[in-house]
Image (tube, rainbow, N blue to C red; front, side, top):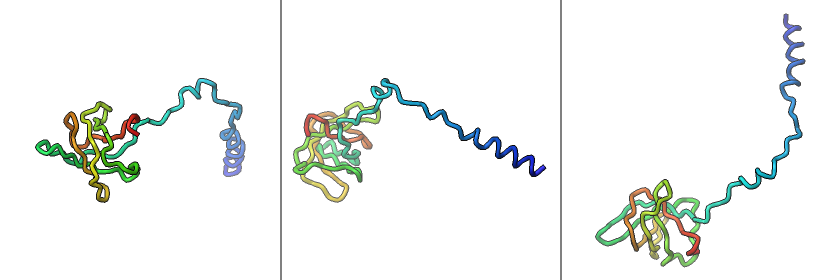
Length: 120
């Protein structure tokens, strides 16, 4: 019984690992390739004070702010990418906290903050 099992295993094992090896991607596969977003993610809205129009942004750990970010225009947007507010970065940056001024709209706590491609 043990020998029969080993014989069956030896016969079936190479058949299970067989591959066709001749599969090449078609020309249409290149057209379906993902392209990176032109928006640069800064972080998320941490707090918003409507009386002073100040917005506190929690900067993402992987975010790279350009030099001279003071005065940089940014957008706050929801998870479904709908813009909620236009922001302007201030010179306040401490650790992962960035201050911003509200230019238009009304951001929600947790909205994603991005740098649009036209302002870079």
